[in-house]
Image (tube, rainbow, N blue to C red; front, top):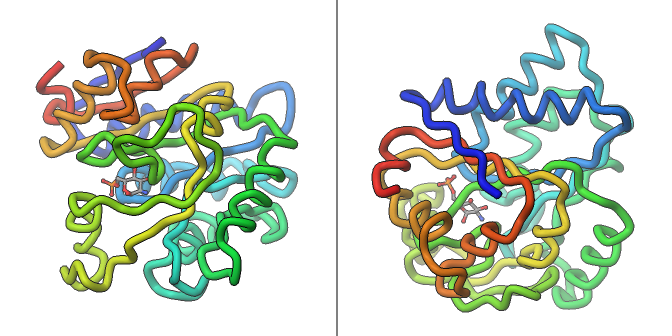
Length: 242
Ligand code: GLP
């Protein structure tokens, strides 16, 4: 079930998304957070950092699980998702590094690393999973065609996704990794609540497919139609095709 909020600016979208995050942080137990990379959740993370500084919200006992990681980038690479999460959130809150989980993209046996990640994830229930959406309708790195029952797995990235993400790699698609380790669609669907953040016109088709299209692997995000509690935060451009 989708609960949709449409705002004028990215700042307002982020502040609204934070309200759901805050209600989870203030809930009756220490939550497990599912986190995402990409530009969409950065404003939400800034709100979390501000709240930590101003209100002392602590992350000392909180576990986090990130959605995905590029295959082939060392953890300290400037564009690894490990680095992204530290630069945009973890370095500014009091979370111990041992509580942080990001799929390993640089191990010797990436398939075994995916299985180990799913194993660890399956010992917990994610209270809230943050998501962005790719312009091709992907969530995490589950590209079109990915089965709905997928668990953490390796995925070949589509040309469109690599083109979209080339902006982080000096605009050079050849530098963008061709594969990623990603939580599967079934892994994501286990989360109790989902926060989806999308802004900008290039997300409008994907958001339409997610909410109004048929539930099909051609638009992986459409699986969220079957989730009981999805909070969708959009600007007018991303909502323009609804
Ligand atoms: C990447 C990530 C996704 C993210 C998507 C959109 O492909 N793997 O998790 O949702 O990009 O990114 P952005 O928010 O920068 O548009």
